[in-house]
Length: 255
Image 1 (cartoon, rainbow, N blue to C red):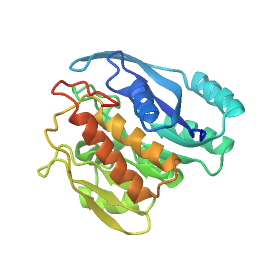
Image 2 (image 1 turned 90 degrees about the horizontal axis):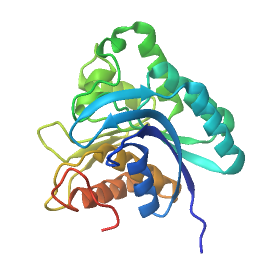
Image 3 (image 1 turned 180 degrees about the vertical axis):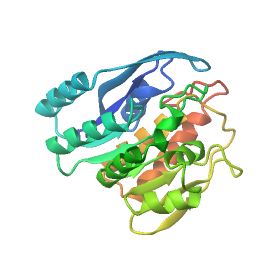
């Protein structure tokens, strides 16, 4: 039997298991990877309500990362909610220190589906914060914001300006939620290519944690050896499969 690739997810804990690292692990397992986990935050939430986010100390996270790298060959990492860009930058630098060739997919979760703000909205107005985020983009392989998130990443830029800026530094998968043509995703590569990824699934319904499922499926397909565009297409199709698994806000895997 072929060995499964190890994929590290650095994300928060959601007790409903629809989002966060438990959703990532379910996705990775379903797609024939082996998921490893570092928790960034403990939360009090369910699929419709978010109460509290208790951030994990960065030193605890780096110690967990270190012991995993001591034991496993990790070439692919997905990062979800994180306290701020400073902590994210520290985590990314630590990952690169452990593996200079590591591929990182960042799902920049700034607000929950129930409108809980993970980052102070004013944080993006600080000039040195934008500089720090620029440095983060230079070090990751792919970023997967939705329209509401990309609007907040650079508040002094239009969406088109932000897309151009980000894709000059890394690959950008712009998710199709929260826009007129729902379900149409767009891939802007660092090499200057553009691809429109249109929906294909039937009877799809909104799911808590769909962004987590998408980003973790993309990183898993990358770990399985698929090139970027194919990994994004297959990740989109897997996410649609979960979206169509039932009518509730909590999707089923392995259906």
